Length: 300
Image 1 (cartoon, one colour):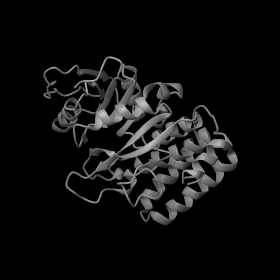
Image 2: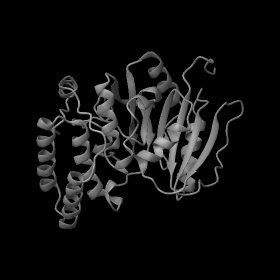
Image 3: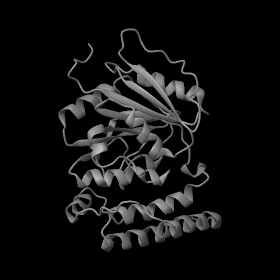
């Protein structure tokens, strides 16, 4: 049975650079085949033409597919922001073009949660290895990531495996476009927490994604460090920003053994200190205390 006219409308934004044709069609098909989905799909070509979409809308479905092409690669946050601007849904699902939903019940579950929990701003989906591997720790957005099957409130989320209340997204200004790549979700999450919203890692909503290291991106270390500094400068009181950055310097020196990676990381760190970070809206101590109670104080 399909949802009534008063049900929350779902949109799905898929960002692509046009180089994963089969994977993109698999992602689109997984969104189209959601039970009671009727999802509005917006595919954003980020500096590239959107490949031909062969996935077909099921008979009787009210789902739609729209494609837009950006003239240049503007990065992940701005690309997703442009996608949201083209959406009309109450809830926007962000889906990586090489990921896909594990079953047809994801949309119905997400719709029900957002409809009954008005303070819920983001659901971070569980990411699983389609080949049955153990998965990656970074895909569970909390410090205690040992049990990916456990749902919990969190203080950040995975951008390409998430669902966001569109009104809340727009309320806090969307994703920080200057970041280009890395930590843009955390910036958005902290601002949503500051407005009293909840963010939840929901292990019942599963997305499949191949196991790939984030270091595959050529500027990973530089952008990771630069945006880490910008994140602190934009969102943290200075008394928290300093220990936050010192903590990450120490952790990077302990974890990273590659000299070239360390050089790139510290180059980005210096860029983060020197270049404008955008609007500064430091979180309140109430928000910082809330993050502490959720198990992730804003210094780690």
